[in-house]
Each structure stands twice: as C-alpha cells, then as structure tokens.
Length: 460
Ligand SMILES: Cc1ncc(COP(=O)(O)O)c(C=O)c1O
Image (cartoon, rainbow, N blue to C red; front, top):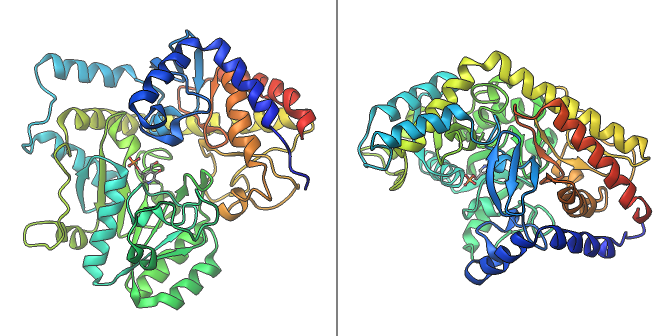
C-alpha cells in the first residue's frame, strides 16, 4: 500500500481553520503560555488548536468565534442526554441558591440515595464513591490484589482505564499493545501487568492457563472505548466469567464509559454476565465528577474499617453538588428508560446508515468498528474506519487500530479537522450520539461527510 500523503491537505485545513477562528487562535496562544499544549488533556487538543467553547446545549456547542458546532465528543462520552440538560442545571441552581452544594465532608442523605440507586440498577452489593474513573479502576485493581493476595493483573490491549500505573500499559498510544504507554511507571508494574486480546476467547483461555492462580484480576470493558468504541462478544464475556471463577480471579468490568449508556444500569446486565466488581463514572455524574467502585461486599469491605486497603474516595469524593447532579440524572434515565435508550439506539443506527451510505455513494469504503456484532445492537458510540480492504470482522483493537489495515490518519486527523470546518466536532473517528441528536443533525453530518469525501478523494 502506497503511503498516502495528507500533509498538504492538513496544512490547507489548518490555514482555513485559523482564518475562520481568530479568537480561538488567540486564546490558544495565551493558553499555551500557562498550560502544556494549551490545555489539560492532550487528547482533547486539536492540531493546530481547538475551538474554545463558550456555551453548550443539547447536541450543539458554540465557540468564541460564534460557530455553532454539532458535537460528537459530548463531555468525553459522559453526556448521553446531550449538554446541560435543563432538569440538571435547574436542580443545581436551586441547590446553590439555597446556599448548599459545596463539599462539607460529612455523609449526607444524597450519598445513600445514589448508592441505593446504583446497587438497585446494577446488582452490586456495595458502592464506594470517588471522583474519577481513573481512581475507580486503580482502586478496584488494588482491592483485587489485596483480596486475592496475588500480584499479576490482566487487561486487554487497547483498553483504557485511566492514567494510573497499571492502566498505562497496552493502550496502544505508542504503537503495539504490549508496550508501556508512559515513561515514569515502575518496572514492576510493567512486569505485573499481563496483556490479553479483546474479543479473542482462545487467547483469553491461553492466558488464563498460563497465569492461572497468579492472577489477581482481569479488568475489561464490556464495550471498549479507546480500543474501538465497540462491544464485546457475549461468548467472550462469558468465557471471562467462567475462567475467573475457575482460577479464583476477580473479574472487574470497567463500565466507566458503558454504564447507563445502553440501559439505566450496567451494560453487563444485557449480556447476562455479572462481574465481581464494576467501575462507573461519566454518565453517573450527570455532567459532574462522580465515579464509583461497586460490586461484592466481601471484596469492597477490604476498604472498610478493619480492612487493609486504603481506598478512601478523596477530599472531593461524594461531593454534594456532584451527587445531586448524578442522582437527578440517573433518576431521569431510570424513569424514562423506555424512551431514552431506544432513541439512542435508533439515532446511532441511523447515523451509521447515513455516513456509510454517503461514503459508498462517493466510492469510499467506510465502516464502523464492531459493526458486525449482533450481541449488543444499537451502539451509540462510533469509531469510523476507512479500511484499505473490504471484508474483515473489525471487532478487535488489533484490527481497528492497525494502521496497515485502516487509514487511521484519515479517520482521526484529516476527518476531524475538515469536519470542524463544517462545524462538526468528532473524536476517535466520530464519537457518540446523545439522545439530543436529531434526524436533522444527522442529515447535517451526512452532507458534511459528502463534502469531506469530495475534498479528500484525490489523495486516496
Ligand atoms: C473505560 C474507561 N475507564 C476509565 C476511564 C478513566 O476515567 P476518568 O477520565 O474519569 O478518570 C475512562 C475515561 O475515558 C474510560 O473510558
């Protein structure tokens, strides 16, 4: 395959972007004087600079230069109902206007109500709150190591569980899924972190046979985020459950991205597989920082009085305003489950249909990662791919994040910058639709994809 050279096209798009977004460009310069790369999360920062957002509502955001932008990033996939739903901002405004909402450090009624809600909707026995998905997965791993008295942990190549030492191996940011993705991590963490393959039950069995009762836990996303925004196969999760039981290994489902996105609870329930621990974040906070480890009481009790694990949520854990937002949001998702989830599914299905049809009409082969999975239909998260060859399952990170198989430069960089010129923000190939995205929004996306296709065609 002859390498495609997008450099001139990217330079042209960057120039157009700078011309139409002078205020964001100026703010980027100012930001870069005080923050690394002008922000706090490199993945969120576009090249040459990101639009600086002034307001956000539903499916749309508005930037400093007055562009209304259709957003498929949606708060890093947290906002399943779109940005700033009125019922949440209203509840928070009332809370604050009553002089409440900031951290007190005391245990209040809200914590109990949210914990009850999570247990009821996920089958967990106990919950401990923290502030980020990263802290939740890190503590779930520490709990499992203490509970089993074992050192090794296993995760999948391409899985992102946040930026803590164990989570930083095998994400694939630096090519390959076996590598440590960050400098500065102790060598022992590298040695103790085993990488297996997502959606590959044979490899999983081999790894369990090899490491057996040395493994403390297997942590896996039932719907993988960074590795493809695509669902696991049912038989894979079932195999994970059987093997962890057989070898006395703690099964952790990382549902930071999938929890409350596919139903008003954990997605694992749709697979009929219950883990020992699950981690939740993103949607359970309703746009505020709430995360949790939930699951078996006998494991979580290791974090309690007399337990040996130091897992305290942190100064701002179980923050009143965050929990109020989370409670209000989850309550709404539960009460409207019958409308919201079918709508998310239908919009996601339509989005894929529109986008792939338009690229086909323009003679460009486009697919979505995991599009042949029938075990969890109706995904509202979408990694758009431009495979070099037709066919293939495209249901593992090894396939969908392989630059020799899919044109990742086209789907991640060229598409992102060109669609921004069309007032559309995409990430990871496309991103997620919320329940606020309408049929008209999808038509807007489709027309932009057509113009994109026509602009890039001669470079393919
Ligand atoms: C599956 C998964 N786990 C953990 C995390 C880390 O969560 P946070 O960014 O809240 O620390 C993320 C974040 O994207 C995630 O997608």
